[in-house]
Length: 365
Ligand SMILES: NC(=O)c1ccc[n+]([C@@H]2O[C@H](COP(=O)([O-])OP(=O)(O)OC[C@H]3O[C@@H](n4cnc5c(N)ncnc54)[C@H](O)[C@@H]3O)[C@@H](O)[C@H]2O)c1
Figure (cartoon, helix red, strand yellow):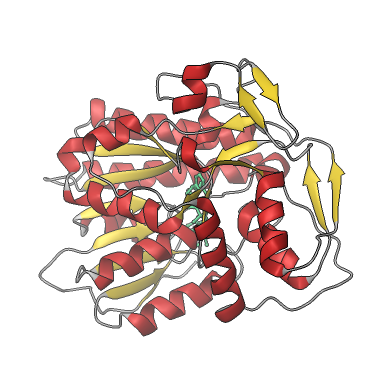
């Protein structure tokens, strides 16, 4: 694909922060946050995800002087070149859906592993390699079938009290499930090794379920936004599994705070992997989120169930104590507040068209 550059931050004295996948959900929120605080940002995105061009246009509109957008693929030379011009790289661009990875594992591998290596190689070619922050996933810990669970009417919870109080820590053995888990896991390990062996000040953030404004959730990824969109449309919702699966949902502003702080203090995080999520206080099941969404839209939701999806964890909650010991962070946004804020954004900024007869589905990706 041909690279298209909007040159606001190219040629500036200050080297920009490069955000790959910067038109996507988390990337555009981080770009907005950094530009608001006066930083120069270069966004790279292939616009592979439908709808993200609106996020890119909004960023340019909000920050014409601080944000440039380069439409290219992270596997391209132009992306590698941009790394060599950056003060820091935050690598979000990815093939993000487990379902797509099962359909097209070679493409998933190529984007997630080769794309990441392309950027890492560019980083290590620099005299002073930029800070390199990688968005990994809780999927690197596999389906966690070994965690003994109890079942309540609404949710699963670990039988072990320590796990229930703190969540899953970074010492949990890696166990890549699904091609997406394998490709993100491989990239996660390459990033750590470029810090260990090749001198790039790189860190890995294994993220749980992030939600918030600018999220274009679909049945394949971004379930909180997906459920809300369908509920606002008055369309039926299919849950894969029994709906008791639990995630520590994290509001995107809390996530961007993690990256913004890590950019400021690279030596605190370099060479390490951190679990990032809303933590035990934001551990909720799909059923609990759907109940809250039902209250927000003010009518009962039409819900049906289908089979569990490959690799879906019954319970995943991040132990964020290691992260918080390295960088100071605000208390996480309570999940009910965050979901209401996302609902408000969807209604005001991207009102979904009503689609009464749509057949849709969702799971805990
Ligand atoms: N959202 C979550 O809950 C979550 C959880 C764990 C990990 N992650 C990881 O965080 C990152 C960002 O996730 P998101 O939810 O913002 O996803 P997103 O799909 O909204 O953003 C990804 C962006 O990358 C772009 N992209 C895809 N392939 C590309 C390529 N080859 N070259 C350049 N750009 C490309 C897409 O167009 C999109 O704008 C991903 O790496 C994802 O694996 C997200």
